[in-house]
Image 1 (cartoon, rainbow, N blue to C red):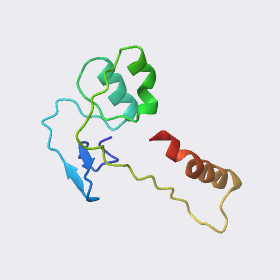
Image 2: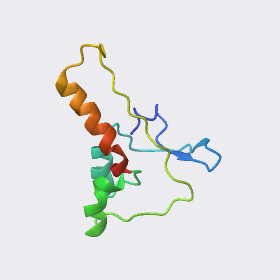
Image 3: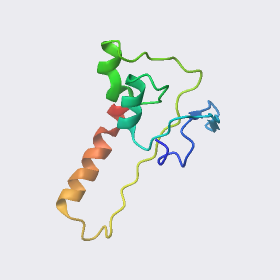
Length: 106
């Protein structure tokens, strides 16, 4: 998404642990993975998406997976909260859930 990647949606990971950014003359830009998915299904253009979010559409032929030379750059996920000492139980459970399950969404 544009916001997660600071306005540069086409970033790739190089083997040397550096990132490569590709300038794209886009005609459609979104700040939501869901909107990017819907646009790709509608044929608006290309989108770099988590495979888990679009596997059903690949399976039914609505989307075509394209092999890239380099993998897409990973996104960073931050949890920001006021105070670690007085963290509400539901917030702690959510953070623990994300930590335990995030790797299965690559």
